[in-house]
Amino acid sequence: MTIRNFREHAANERTFLAWTRTAIAIMAFGFLVERFDIFLEAVAPSLSGRALAPLGHKFGNIAGLALIVAGTAMVALAMIRFVKNAKIIDSDEEVNAPGSKLDFSLASLLILLGVSMFLYLSHVFIPAT
Image 1: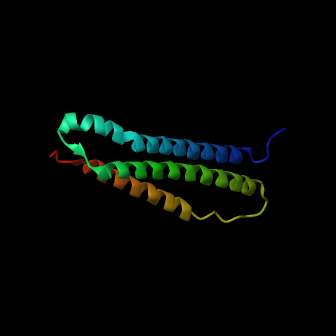
Image 2: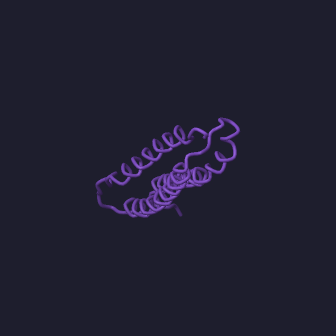
Image 3: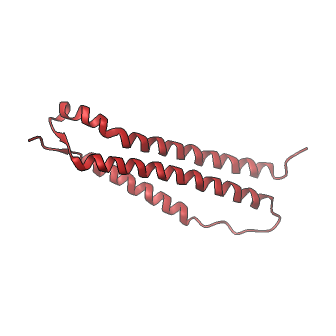
C-alpha cells in the first residue's frame, strides 16, 4: 500500500522539521544571550578594565527573552503550516499559495534583534571610575 502524494507529504514534513530545528537554535541562542551578561561581568573588568553598563544587563535579558519568544512563535507557525499544507496536499481542488506576511514579520523581528544585539555588544562597557 502506498501513501497518496507521498513525495509532497515527505517534503512538507522535511520543511516542518527544518523550521523546528531553526526555532530550537534561535531559542538556544536566546538563552545564551540572556545569560551572556554573567560571562561579560566576570571577564570584562580583567580584559578591558571597564565595568558593564547597568542598562546592558536589562537589554541582554530582554533580547534573550525576545529570541526565546520568537523561536516559540516559529514552532507554532511551523505546526500550523504543516497541518494546513497536509490538508492542501490531500485536497483535489486548486488552492492559491498562502501569503508570507507572517514570515516577513518574523524575519524582520529577527533582523531587528540582530541589529540590537550588535549595538548592545558594541556599547556594553562604560569607562571605569
